Image (cartoon, rainbow, N blue to C red; front, top):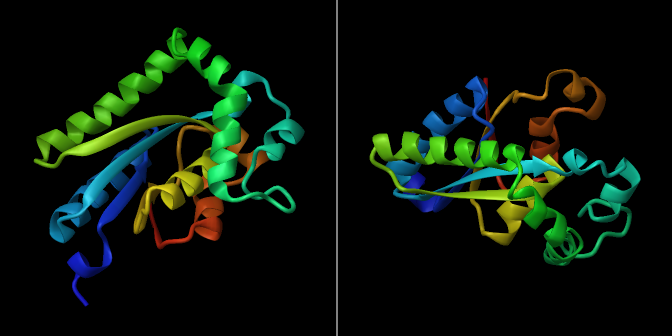
Length: 173
């Protein structure tokens, strides 16, 4: 089976860390060889908003008897749309815009167009929900991002995504 027959839509979660940049490079090469569309996703972690884990889990696609992912996405949109609009005027969000723009520039330099999206939510769950909602065939991500000590407390995003994703996940070291 050829790569073109397997991968039509590729997702790269991107935080501009060295591992994410390396993953983006791999994804670009795969997208070119497969003639696939490339999507870059940057996630604004809801912990930035000061939400407790309990509150954030109520909006999680993995919360006990969870509703379908599309319902969860809608609940996020409704519950946090005002906060997300407020955040768009803050420096943190502007930094996320720079990260997304940087990814698009990297793609453009390598002669591939990519869509870049910024979403808000639990990072791993937002990646999984986006991939399901958008028919992603492959997720290519770095093994580590810029979360440092928090990662020790919260777990690895890449392993959470690999465990919960509906499609193959390629983790780049």
